[in-house]
Length: 231
Length: 231
Image 1: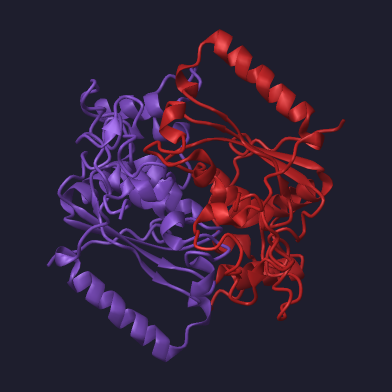
Image 2 (image 1 turned 180 degrees about the vertical axis):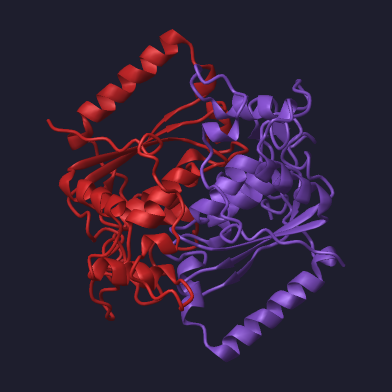
C-alpha cells in the first residue's frame, strides 16, 4: 500500500491565509478570501504548495490527520492548512443550490468515497474529556473538524483515535497506544464511520438547513446530526 | 477611555508556535511546547512580540476578540496568537494542585477581574447556527474559545456578538449591526457574563474534573458547565 506524508512543520508550511496566496488577485480590492480562493482555483493560479496538498488529497483513499490538542483545538499551522487548502470552488461553494439540494456538502463533495480519521494527543486526563468532564466531551470538541471540515467535504469520517496524558506517557503505555493505533489503521476499511446525517437526503429543511422538526424532536446541539441520535 | 488594538495581519504576526519562539531552549531536545514556554516565561526569554501581547492583556480591563468564522473556528493567525501568547506559567500551569484546588483556571487565573467578548462574522445564514442548524449551535462552536481559552484563564466572558451573512451584508444592515455592536460595547460593564461554573468551588470532583453526579444529573456536553444548565 502506498502512502505519503505532509509534515507541516518540516515543510515550513505557511500557516495563515493572506494576499500572497492569491498572486493574481487585484491588490486594490479588499481581500475577501472566499472570492479570492474561488478565482485562484478557477484560474489555476493558487500557489504551488496549496495545489500540491489538494493533489495529495485527491490521490488518497484514506487520510489521517494527526495533531496535539492545543487550547481545545488543532494547532494554528494545521488550521491554516484547512484555511488554505480547502479552497472555494474546490472544497466548498460547489454543486447546485435549489430547494432540494443545497450544494455538494455534508456527505457529498470533492472527497466523496474517501475516508478520514483524526489521531489526537491530549495532555489532560481522559476524565476531563468524558461526557461530564470540564473540557467538554472529546467528540464535541472534535465536531467542528469531523463534521464541519471532513464530512462537509464528503469524507466518511471514522471515530477519532485519542491518546490522553501524552506528555507523561511511559514507554509501556506508549507501546500499548501504538498497538491500538496500528489496529485502528489496519481495520480502517471495515470500521463504521460516524453516522452523520447527509444534508441533501431528506433530514434537513432546505434552505434553512435545520434538522426537520419530526426528527429527534426537542433535542438540539451537535449530537442530533448523527443518525443514531434519537435512540 | 483608553484603547489599544492588535491587528494581527497588519503586525505580520507569526502564526505558528515553533523553535524560534524559544531562543534559549536546548536545540538537541525535541520541542515540547508546554515545557519550552514555561521555561521561556520563567527566564524572561520569550520573544518580544509575545511579551508585548501579554502586557497588553495585563493592561486591559476589557478584551474584544474579533474574527471571521472560517471552517467553524477562528483563522489560523488568531489560533496561533492563543498558542503563542497564552504561555505555560502565564496563562496555564499556574496555582496549587491539591484535592480541593486544581490549578488557577476555569474562573480563576491571570486574567481574573477582566472581561472578554467575541465579535464574530459568519458567512452563513443564522438558521444554520441555531439550536438545530446543520453547523451546530453557535454557542457550542464558540465554547472552546469562550470556556476553554477565556474563562479558563480567568476572564468573565460576555455573550458573543455574531453577525451572519456578513459577506452579503448591505449598507443598511451593516449600519444596523454596527449600532447593535456599539450598544454591546457601551453596556459591557453591566452585561451579565456567561454563567460558567468555576472549577474550584464545589461543583466538580477533583482531580477527575467531572461535574458532580448530583448536579444536572443525567445530562452531558458543553451546556452542563453553565450554572443555569439544570433549569
